[in-house]
Length: 194
Image 1 (cartoon, rainbow, N blue to C red):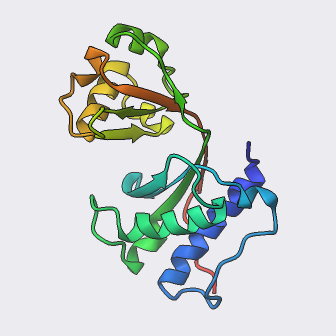
Image 2 (image 1 turned 180 degrees about the horizontal axis):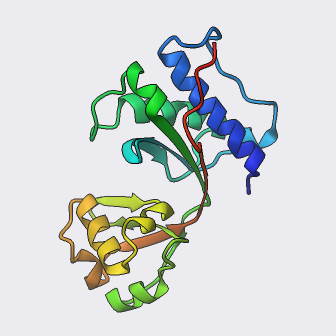
Image 3 (image 1 turned 180 degrees about the vertical axis):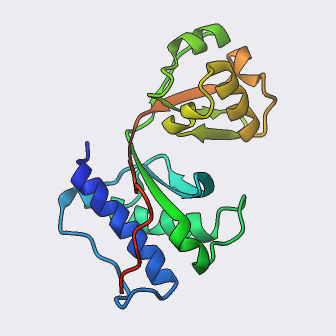
């Protein structure tokens, strides 16, 4: 899908994007190598973590723009427009770690009831999207399974994220899609470069 080298290039690109936002880079526009994969339209999420805790996460489930443009836009949005957190400040950058998840296209998951849904989910493999007919919905990336390894708890928390009762998944009335992700993460924030 995407190589470790390409993932590393995307991480450096995201880091340079943040540095440019805070005026810490001489070049205005960070650049990626000329590689066709960065022009593919892919779903992607950018997560910012500070001391192991989520500090911002924004993305799109489907590819609506080239991957390079999506990474740039979502990096800035995760830093400044995730309503769950205050805007990122420059003094946080040395403690910030970036993760990028490049997604496969979501696939519909057919199921009759909550028990069948539990049987069909693949913990630590599938990202899950739930939707109600009236448009309410939410997703958890595959890495959320590390925090919520129990499928029932995972689904309860996903329903709550969508503004639904935690038990809404049991009825069989939700539209469910799954997807996979290739995740790339900085091991530790790099030293500043100028």
